[in-house]
Image: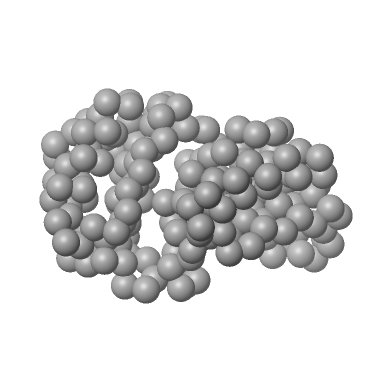
Length: 182
């Protein structure tokens, strides 16, 4: 399993595609996802061992030139993050639901990793920029106490960067809402 994840965000779709190609050719990484996001940006997310991800992200930052927006690397990333990005999570059961929303894709990935590591919660979905104006959000479930602790861990990261939109906790979600979340 991958030990690290990295992301580079671009303001040019064309440069983003070109750079993503350079990132994976130069380093032993795999793409988690690469594609356009609102509003007209491009993201490339890679994973692999820490050294390879670091090398790939450095290449991405350099090749991006003036089209660079943001980047980050998470060594020892929570393995639950990958299925959440891909939208293939299926929690055993839905308890309390936590929702965190960020103005930044990279910040939301950092916050989601912290959320998953803070307490015993399960990912539902990590939505990155598409169809939501370039913002990102993360939904997850667990006991009320675990969701509260996880929200605090995620908020700390997003507030520190000044990119938190909102965070909410639903202690006992309606079954009809749960159907929409899954």
